[in-house]
Every structure is written in C-alpha cells, then in structure tokens.
Image 1 (cartoon, rainbow, N blue to C red):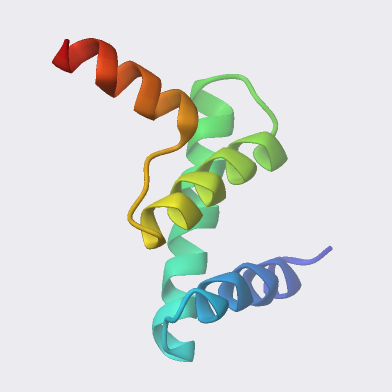
Image 2: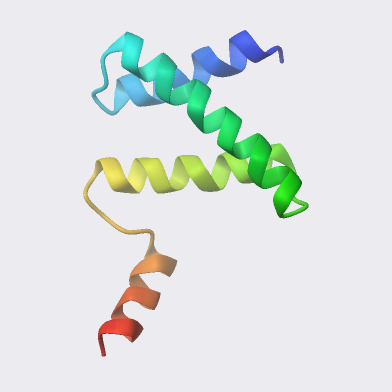
Amino acid sequence: MNQEDETQQIAQIFVNLGAEQTMARQMARQLIKRAEQRSHEEDISKTEALKELLEVAVYGAQGMLKPSDEANFDKEKG
C-alpha cells in the first residue's frame, strides 16, 4: 500500500469519528509519522504502532480510556 492510500484510509477513520475531511487527513498524516517514530524507537512494526495509536484515538474520540489504561488509572487513583 502506498503512503497516499494509507493516509486516505486512516483519514476515513477520523471522518467516521466526526472530523472534517481536511482535518482528518492532517491527523492521519501526523498519526502515520508518529507510528513510524514509535516503530524505530520501540523496535516494533509500523503496523503494530499504528494499530496502538488508532486504538487510543478511537477510544479517546468516545471519551473513554483503553481498558488496559483504565485499569492502570484505577490503580494509580487507589
């Protein structure tokens, strides 16, 4: 998959979450760039980094924490 297709597919996720098309494309480009950084920093695949970042974005758009983060948050509060 080329970078433009990848950007468009991720942008569509953000559009589905309620973002305007231009902003969705900008967010998609930033998310891809961060996934590339994480893949180098953490020695994981870009796909895995992208999956994790998208998961955070989707939960965040719904005003929720990922279940694993929620468990850690509850421990810190307790």
